[in-house]
Length: 490
Image 1 (tube, rainbow, N blue to C red):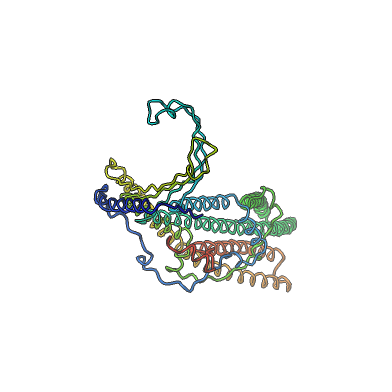
Image 2: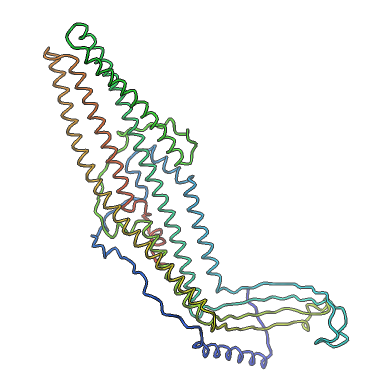
């Protein structure tokens, strides 16, 4: 809407001179503003380059990194969890709130306009500024008016505040991204743990079957006087121990399903039919080179840095509070004592109201406000530095664990191959009469123990891959638009 005010030439000239004079007075009085006290240097931002990290710009981790495991049940579980989880919804509300606050900040320098209609029935004083017959009479004063104001951002104070608000929006979006990544990793780790428990239960059941068969053979040999009864006692002890282990692992399976259901915003018993196996979760190799590029894709690190940028803009805005605040008000409408004449030209009124507000004596309020913003800036820098160092340690630890589990897994696989060969040899000896079925069963039971150890190391290796992907910034959007929104300075 454009408001056009037609003023007589002479009146417009006078008003223009007043506006210019007001501006000149503002500039002349600028030096008399409240003075800024010297501020301490504060904390310094720790840059990744100071940590002597190598370049890892060629390393690429896809956004849906859990797809690497090639398990549809896991992928479906994470997808539905990201859509329905309350913690993700809470993170999204923080984004919406930050966006709303940014909108409020941005509106500060826009033209504000409003319309009003006032009806005032009053008696005018006989000894006031209005002489009789108006004085001493009861009249109805009617005003219909359009008014507005504009605050030009002469020194950039509101622009700095808006940049700070945008930085908070970016940080909230990145924290939501970090929450999604954390949730995805937690579900994947629990899914692997559930698969391991189910595999261990199956191995224990098979081992129990072989132990039962072995006990029957030993019992027959004891009756035949070929073995001592003491061997039977050992088998009974081992069978009792297996029953205890089976009970414990069944409980662990139920608890894992309950936790996965909770993480995916389902009822605790909703996933009782979920029965994954480690063989259905595909292993893969990771380009585990650590570098600046990888830490730059950690959502929590970039979020902390966005808050640093936002706090720096807040400090700048606090400094600009010491400068004059210039505003321009205007109004146009009708005012009359006779409502029938409200919209007549004779009832018209209009005007401009320029103003300059100079903070000269404020009792130290502005300097205290600036000190508070500077402290918030130092706090944001300290949080960022701590987050960066924690991220580096987490990535380094995850890499070490990933390498170690790779070696241990290979070692257990070698032991499994040797145990399989021993079982084959013992089976051949039994067939040609050089051994008995008791020896074969003992070799199979021993092989099952190695198989369980191999499953445990396989689960540890898969879990270490999850931790490494998470620590290297997995889940970072790969499209250019998202990268621009998340990574740029406010």
